[in-house]
Image (cartoon, rainbow, N blue to C red; front, side):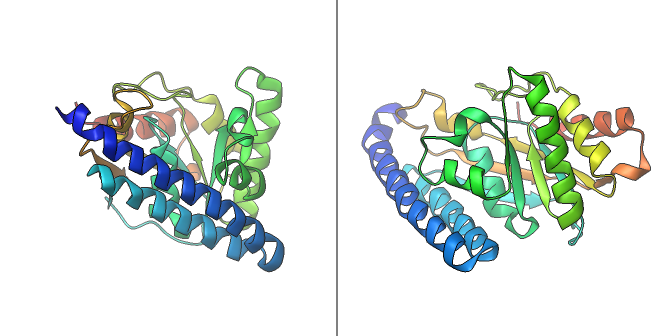
Length: 244
């Protein structure tokens, strides 16, 4: 019954999402070229807000919980489990004051209104998961960027999203490079719950009445731990709060 009810509502959501992406593609372009980085960033922030609110049509809500205050003016490496596209949108909106940039797969860098533009012009890096030689310098570039500008980056060590909410293998290489070249950074684990339920039936229809939740854990200073210990602490924090 839920799936049946969701069909007309999902159609409305997709129309709204497409409209938002197309409008903000233009807004991003104008903001960046006429007013610079800060205006472009604000346009991306508000795009995230409207994309999240569009889900209300399908009775889906999103909220964030901070387990501790995060310091500002420090480079931050957000490390999260990965369940779907709304992981990126939610983090972008809820953590907007930390200027999150993304380590994203190269396929997202073209063909998607607003999303591709932001990834290419907003400070993110695109990596080819099939070409480690390309990925390593891209990650190094990202780390040096957040170190120099006291901004943040988001990485999903699972690599690909979970389709049932159960966490996959956490690969450490990407996080390790970010920590190496951003030694003043804080690693902040994020647990994402129920994002996979939005696409539990596939692309269409959307899941009805999903309660999307982001839990932001306490920061871990890169300088205070050897990497293996830090990564173990990070993975444990993320997985420990995933709902079964």
